[in-house]
Amino acid sequence: MSAQSRPVSRALRRRRLTAAAAALPILFGALAACGYGSNDDKSSDATTAPAASAGADAKKLSADQVRIGYFPNLTHATPLVGLKEGIFQKELGATTVKELTFNAGPEEIEALNAGSIDIGWIGPSPAINGYTKSNGASLKIISGSASGGVKLVVNPDKIKSLDDVKGKKIATPQLGNTQDVALLNWIKSKGWKVDAQSGKGDVSVVRTDNKITPDAYKQGSIDGAWVPEPTASKLVAEGAKVLLDESTLWPDNKFVITNVIVSQKFLKAHPDVVEAVLRGSVNTNAWIAANSDKAKADANDQLKKLTQKALPANVLDPAWKSIQVLDDPLAKTAGEEAQHAVDAGLLKAPKLNGLYDLTLLNKVLTADGKPTVDAAGLGAQ
Image 1: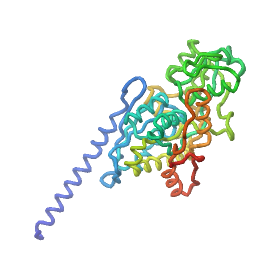
Image 2 (image 1 turned 60 degrees about the vertical axis):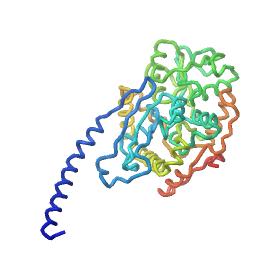
Image 3 (image 1 turned 90 degrees about the vertical axis):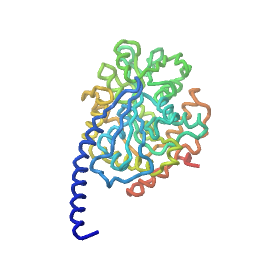
Image 4 (image 1 turned 30 degrees about the horizontal axis):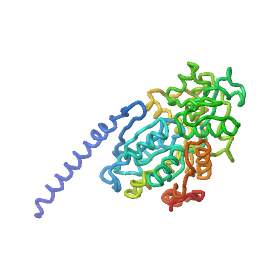
């Protein structure tokens, strides 16, 4: 190359870089405008593009996209907050995130089995059920996410004590979901009988979508509900009373309400993407702990986007206080919940060896100088 041509080449390069930089805000503005659309009345999805600040330097992982499923519940605060704040995207670099939301765990397991999602936030009962039905081939639990946030709330005019629940109609989100199993187990502990499949017996268990449970309560078609937040506090705002906080039934008031699962196929093909998501989860939980008020507002903003309605303060504040985000999957309590499902007749005695693979989570925790967590004997085989 001649000396005369070099300045011209540098000038061309400068013009090209300037033009490319000018185009970035337009490109990412268009992507950001793609909000949430509805697939059906049970789930919604959106795609989150890499942040513009990542630019050409964004790290390239082994997958162009990761599809993440979760619920529009405060018990799924980690994805609600972490996706809004861009914490997950920061770790994923050039890998885009596609979000899908669900009402309850069984339908999310169906989506994972169908290959519609790769990673999901979900309760332990459907995760265990999905694992056992696939003979241990479909998924792994790879992290914890939240404890608490589940309550039995009732009509105080009809139910004044725990014994008054007998003969009443109590809602749960879906047959076989985590709250459904918890209610059936509590009913059994009272010495009452209910047919798990039909919900008929000494207590009528009415499986009702969380979105319509408050209306069902107002219309008098249910007398109470065993539900996660914010549904529990929505019912309280309608005049219901908290009869029982599920956390009081567990040692140290801790029990797993939300775990992180991954498709085994995706874990095997893209461990770097899974590790990035787990870094995002751990970092989000730490951020929530350090910025509780902002995190609460973020979660409410996301709920408004997903459900078209923000939570009022009299619902949001008590609901938020009852939930603890954490990285530990509390595997021992999940094992006990599995036994509850067996006792209720919803699950055959499961073989849970290998249910958990906490290798990547513990790698992330160790790198952050945090204590590792264990799988209570149910780790990767």
